[in-house]
Every structure is written in structure tokens, then in C-alpha cells.
Length: 173
Image (cartoon, rainbow, N blue to C red; front, side, top):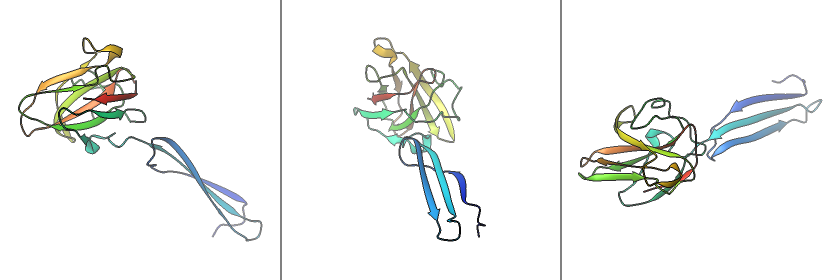
């Protein structure tokens, strides 16, 4: 029961499915004396689908996928650590299965911001660094690529992230 106080506003958070800051509100009104109403303001930050390691997108060798780190969150489990390069910006996650030969993950000449790549094995709860790269020679716009010797039937987690907090769009090959 809400006493006759006029308008009451309640702020809550929600997890939107669209990328970026999302706002919405719901108004509940009544025909009771003094027309009381309840306004619920909803604010939340939508992120990209592979923002978290556990939501990594599986990719195959010799394919290209488009991605973005815009609206991604900083990966607090690995932030400040070094996996070939320091992790200082939001990133997104991919997995690839080892084939018993070299694998290259590349954003070389395929991004609109300064990219970095870090590769891990293990699982999302306990990642082990394989290596990484920032600013590969011959790649323009401070883009990069990283090559490692893969083991067959081993899952590799690829984190595409940026330099100094930068985010943007990329193609990963």
C-alpha cells in the first residue's frame, strides 16, 4: 500500500541486451485520490556477447570474424597482468582448437584502433599465458598479430584488447 504522497521515483539497474548505456522507465498510475503514480527508472550497460572469457566465440583457423571492443568491460581477472603484453584495456574473447601446427591470430591492418592480442590455455577460471603481441612489425595503425605453436586438441583463448584503454572495431583472422 502506497500512501497518498504524489509521485514516488525508484532507481534500479538492469542488464540490457543492446550494446551501450540503455535507459528505460515504467510508470504505474492509479485513479485513486490525488492520482498517485510510481515511476521506475531503469539504467544499465549492455556489453558485447563475448565480453567475458566464459562467453568466448569459437572460431576456426583460416577464417575472419568481425568484432568490437566498444562497450566491452575490463577483464579484471587478467587486467594488469602481462601475457606477451600488458592488459590495460577492455577486450573480447575467442577460442580456437589447436591443430598441432602454428596458428596466427591477427588484426594486422584490420582495425580502427591500437590493438593487442593475448593467447591463453587452461580454462576461464585458471588461464595460463601462451604469449601475446602489441604493434607487430609491418602492421599499420598499431595493429598486431601473434603466432604460436599449437598442440592438437588444446583449446586456446584469444583476447583481443587495446593499448591504454583504447577500444574499437576489428577483423580477427
